[in-house]
Image 1 (cartoon, rainbow, N blue to C red):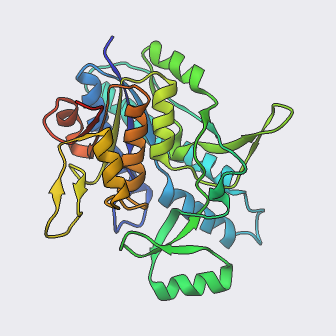
Image 2 (tube, helix red, strand yellow; image 1 turned 30 degrees about the vertical axis):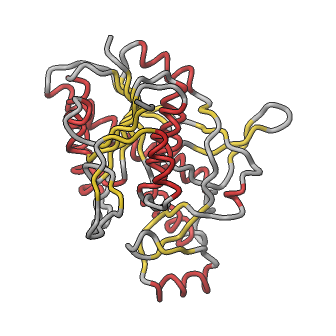
Length: 315
């Protein structure tokens, strides 16, 4: 059996910038994404897929609020579970079709995943995770005043609603995901960072209103299923220092020491590359082989060492 890679899909894998998020748009994006994932399988890897849900869960929240006089609104953790099913269904069906087209009868399954967090995580007092659509400053101020939203500017792209994003501590379903991978199943898990839950004193679990960062949850998933590699797919081919500045430098290889230094120097924005680089560094710090950050359409090339940014230990 080949190496196991956890593939963390960025938002562009499901919804492109400027799109409305129709079923047709998302299905076409997922079709292209599935072709890249199946190519990774053809290269000899066992694959676990995880994905974000920021735009989708934000849209579901809007639907809940707009229809609250007709049907009871659901809490944020249930909205997150809903988007796990929604996106998982699109990925699962499209991946299966792509596999069949290439002559593989490989099983694909989406597993609704719960992720344990600390109810006392400071993130609950300082929401930072962007969800839903982008707004102008004027519209954001109006929403904050009228609806009580917490809104923040997102990496120069506009204003978005933000919700708590606690650190993932454990994947509740890790054992069964690991078993499925060993059986040769292509698993989609921890979608949208997983449903955040806390463990109560009696050992039971309860959902919390938050959205876990999908890259950090993907890193935790990768460790708990004993993955060899973490592949973070986004909309840029390589990580950059001084991003989009005249002195921009593209990075081919980053050691742990270099990565931590670049973080302190402020090169990686919280709403974009920040959590991706943090996830990559955590994975390699845990003793795993390597993490790679690259563009969705460069996945196979990056695994072959031809492109992307490779995060490695010293030397």
